[in-house]
Amino acid sequence: MAAPRSLRELLEALEGAGQLRRVKAPLSPVLEIPAALRMAMRSRGPALLFENVRGHPGWRVAGNLFGAPGRVELALGTRDLEAIGWRLVSAAWRPPPLGLREKLRGLAGVLDMARYAPKLVGRAAFEEVVLEGGEARLSRLPLFKCWPRDGGRYITFGQTYILDPATGVANIGVYRLMELDDKRLAVHWQLHKRGRHAYLESIRRGGEARVAIVIGGDPAAMLVGAMPVPYPLDKLLFAGLMAGRGVEVYRLPSGIPVPASAEVVIEARVDPRGEAVEGPFGDHWGYYDGPSPGWPVAVVERIWMRSDPIYVGTVVGKPVMEDAYIGKAAEAIFKPVIRTLLPEVVDLNFPVHGVFQGMLIVSIRKTYPGQAKKVMMALWGLGQTSLTKIIVVVDEDVDPRDPGQVAWAVSANVDPQRDVLVVPAAHTDQLDPAAPAPGYGSKLGIDATRKLPEENNGRPWPPEVEPDPEVDARVRRILEGEGIRLD
Image (cartoon, rainbow, N blue to C red):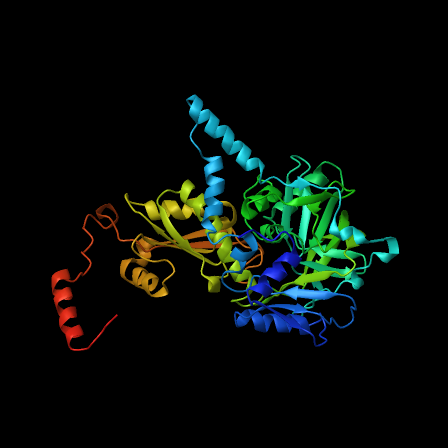
């Protein structure tokens, strides 16, 4: 199956699969549409297309596009998300070519990567309406207020594009953007985000950061904004890698390339002298975050959009919500990268109720003492997993997705004094409500593997109970002969 090239193609694919419902009753983007999306997300319900948006005639609003198993795969045109990660690994970590045949194969690999690069086009769907000056007002857009105590209306699924001035690499991030007034947005760039680094580099060079905020467009580009793509890999290139073909892009007057199929594009400059109080906002931890001062301000200069635009929004909160399925897709895509960097890793699981940054359970093929702690340290030094608060390491025969098996491993294999590691004064998720200061707290590692003699005062670990297979087979035949099936 081919990956859809636009939001509209994705909506058609969802409707064709029976996973889209149209809502004709008038609903407001202030609390009402978010409430409907939240109900759909909680029930693994359909994607929704609201066709009568109160206060915004001519607009439609789409949401919960990825809020059920299989929808990310449909959006990327694949049933095997891990294959995307192996595609990246095979390009980055292939052995050096020695003979002519290997060199030709290596050249073919380079050419293969080239087909994932963005494709520049001269026309864009969003050129139909261009609003500038006083006409470029945020109040024209059906921005969401998601929760009753939110500090205002937000863009919740906009992709913020910014070019790194040092490298020219395109970054795309899904950051929450709070409407301050008709022309200004508070940009919630957390400390560790690639977009913030590019912004700070622009300021360091004495320039002014330019951004483009994209609504809708190529589904691969929509998703890549929420993916932990390692720097300096270009996110538009990675979007093409995910979709299996390059993303068609249109270059804005600011020089920023954006998907040509976008529904709305907001061009803005980020004022280096402007700082805003942002929040409160009901975030993915399930609590209100903020209000907090010091966030950069994006000043709107131009709004491009289709003549019949479709707005896209999402809602976050206590899991499980739409972001959980995007997060599980990222887990599958980047598992090959982690397994390449840490070959002992067998499998891993970010439990959705652990809010991803909260907990990671990883199984390893253990061969030497201290290996579980080595894996913890390595993961805390890698990109997005550096934000993970709690890491539990289990043996390869323990399924990290089975809470019962993990609970058994922690209970049976852990001596708290020996196997629990606390790392104080560490970088954490800036939104973690338990951290004593934003972005600064501690880590917890639990070694729930069986201990080697070196780790257990020289004593061998006791053998695990196992049945006699011949006795089990004989008894099973007897029970089945009595009409008792135990499968």
